[in-house]
Length: 253
Image (tube, rainbow, N blue to C red; front, side, top):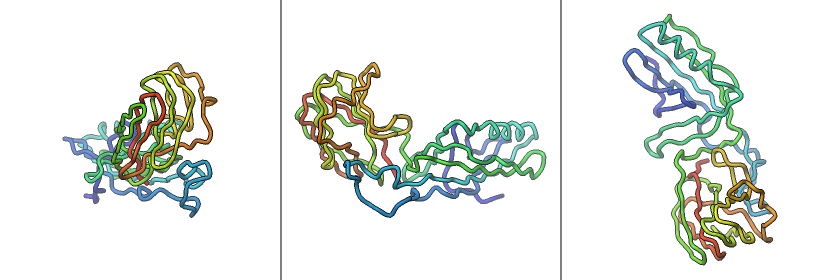
């Protein structure tokens, strides 16, 4: 039997590791799941106060290798078809379930593969080359912190890299939010408005939208900076008049 990679993996809905009667799937190798690749050596905040612009980080390329062993050729053919159905135009969660951190994922597209090599009519090996435009790994479950108008809260964040945030106004009012020394300020926003500093898994970057999707970016008050939730202890202060809910995905480089 081929050696098994130590962590369980899922690519979208395709389960790469499982042992069921007549259906054994093993990940035999993963290349590219280490630290996020850097494009530059500069390690500092950019001039607008945001953490590490996209220019600092390169795409992540992952080469995933696996083994399929089934009791029937029909079962093996079905799994080969499942792999072949991975669409290069679609982003999938590449999720790694690791005992020490839980399930972490990045969004990938299929660049090459699955390139099956049949051992016999009911078993084969395969290889997939996957590319993540955003190289960071994120927890699949978001963490939410609430802070009232005029309040300060302390929050300890998991991860190894500053996490982009989504701020929701839970009441009408102004935003004057400081996290780890970075200050986000706006004029009065209606309840339900969202301020998003980064992508998470699906959110666009740097947006301020009303509850109905109207662009409110013009209500920014300068000077301002887009904060991030830093791994470890964060002091979160809302000097504005709105109550806020702050959502983020713990992020790992």
